[in-house]
Image: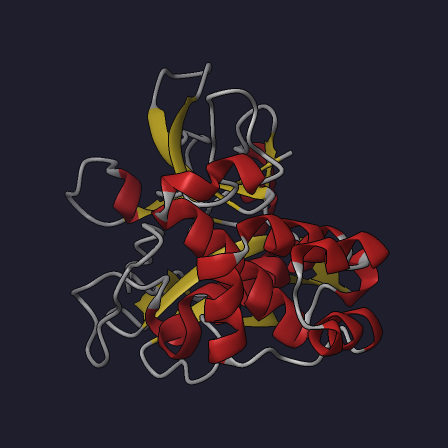
Length: 266
């Protein structure tokens, strides 16, 4: 940390960052660093231990990332910068093609996690999936049992784990802020509280099928399988029209239900 004093920055702030990693800098302090000393900012963030990267310090880190993305003068201070190339670590749109049927899916990279942005639509055979009547096997209309959901994963992709979802929720909370509960939801179609779809996830309130194979909760719920179980019951991610804190809730449900499928890259 001694070399940081070469930039002439107040030693009090240096000590604060060194000894109190979770102390949140004021907006004024952040602005001072962003405007006057991007090299110092890079060095400060490089000193943050990985086990301290949560809470206020992560919020500060994200503000730093945002600043780097909006001012080309600072790209060279970002660890991802190589030569004249710079790639954002989150929010990168892409695509993947299912080699089994040639169907293409949109993807988005959020921090270290790459997610399929639209529902998987793979023909798993009669009786294993539920199709809305007369909707011609469109991706928005397919629901899978838990076992079938695991079977239809694209090569190199998996059903999200609880940890994947928690990381996504934390990302939304930190990057989107107070709008986080709405950030994964589509901008229309919900009975109440349409979303803002700020990450392109576009969760549609299609509902799911229950143990009697009836379609339920259309208009107020989007439900997706996770890849783990709690005893005999698989976990799911449910996004509802009244999600208040985080974008979605993890809960174990009956494996007799059929839900939508999104995937995460291995």
